[in-house]
Image 1 (cartoon, rainbow, N blue to C red):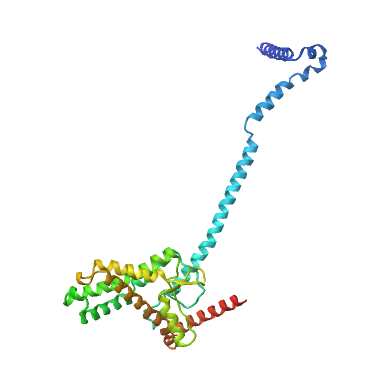
Image 2 (image 1 turned 30 degrees about the vertical axis):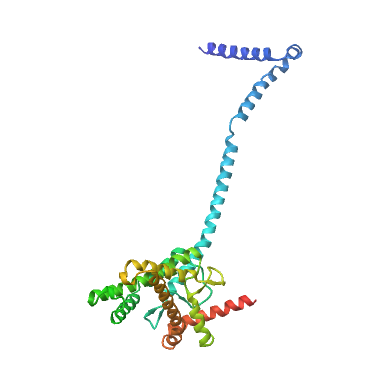
Length: 313
């Protein structure tokens, strides 16, 4: 059996050598010495190298895939690198909002929409809506609109609602609906679209006339997001008019119409002016009675002074 296998192997070597010699040029067959016969398999090696070149090299693919993976991971690491910057700005805005939501003049009246410093981080659309909604559902807001409903009842305003308990709740409910719609549209939705600041930036210094004028024009003037540029407060004015138009859905038939739409919008704007005046001066009185309020005002004034110094430099 062993001799038989050896014979087969020897025959295969002879046949392969014969095939290679037959494929070689005639002058090579005649002139090539016997010692050069072992060099004959070179064409087969060339074919093998050509075959290997045609096949994908594992090492190159591995390096390419690793480099591609590295580039992808590098590009992926850049995007998360940008996220923390945006996230930190969002977190800073959240911290400022959290601080604002604890502000109450005299410990009762909410001042969520008031900032004691001019240096603030722009709010996102969601944060603006959340701030507007937070003020709209505060218990003080419900109590305020309940008092307005009583005032309307005594003044026989909106007589189409009738009298008694039913008429009172209709008047109070309509007053709250006006406030809710004006706040959500004028201080939440539209400022998010037009990139306007819904917050009132308390001045806190200067003479009374200057501060009163500053607070009054805040109803028709606001800051653009992230800048110190003042611009017309389209959000507040147009938002109040839109809220006045929607109020035609729930007011009595006798009080509906174009006159009511613009009249109700102007009333909401005037109410906003009164609120700004209160936020500007009420803290001066509260500062004398509340240490926490004094600290908040002092921190805001120091931040404003530092910002002015930085701008001058």
